[in-house]
Image 1 (cartoon, rainbow, N blue to C red):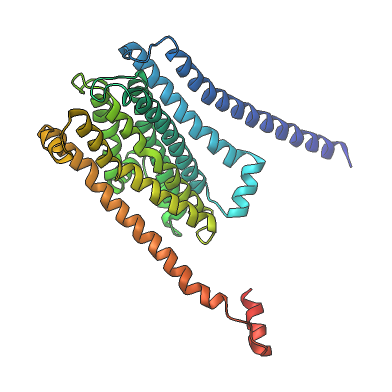
Image 2: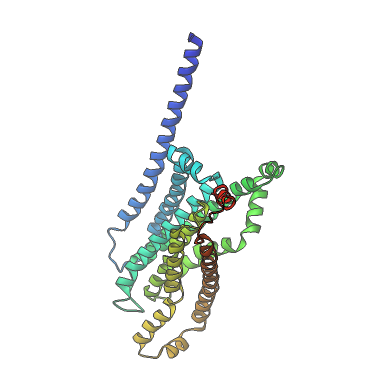
Length: 354
């Protein structure tokens, strides 16, 4: 081997080492950002008494930390999926595109947000609902309203990144070039047109929902808001369902078990929860549930209807999906349970299918 070949080999090895070090630095930086932002947010709340309210300055600080946390977590999962050896092996094994990796990252962040929301709901309900149903407060309710509001605006950006990447990957032949040549404003416009409902939902929750919990509650306690936080209990299972679908595991037992768990938690925390909250309220004011509902302000009843009715629609869609999966399995099971024929022709055909 001559000197020129040796120099080229050593040069390529140096570049590989530099790239590896750069990837490791980015990985550690993102990890530090995720852990650091969450830790700082937690430490910022330590001086507070449970019944304290969150000052605007502290709230703005929590929102900034929330934005750093969710963006960094999305970046960290993408980095693992796209820039590490483990990610490369997983992409090869499950035949994942870059758009699939971004979509899986988005769903994992969504599941993490749901876990944080449920943790907040448990703390708030354990404190406020066991004291005064209408007046007790816990600072976690407002604190996570500030911190979690950042998620909904982060998610609009995250879904845009997934949309753009998926649009390019899903394009056919010459359409790929057209998709790549689109200006950023055109891509944003296309994204807004194709995803209007989820974007409006995020803007509504991240703005009006935040204002309702922090400023517009009219001096009421946050027991009910604790139950609203618990509505996210089914979200991790919705995310896992989407991830398993990307991994082409719809036929697995895990997919079925997760789907049933998703149905149960959705029914428990998004349908059965409202009658239970009204029962607690009726017990508090010593009236029947029907009288308690009638005593609510009109605006409150309208808000509850707007929040509840879509849940019945989504639950019906989930139930139909679960029924269709079981129906397919029922049809497939008699076929798979047939005994193999001794005919050479049939035996050979089965070998080809396998």
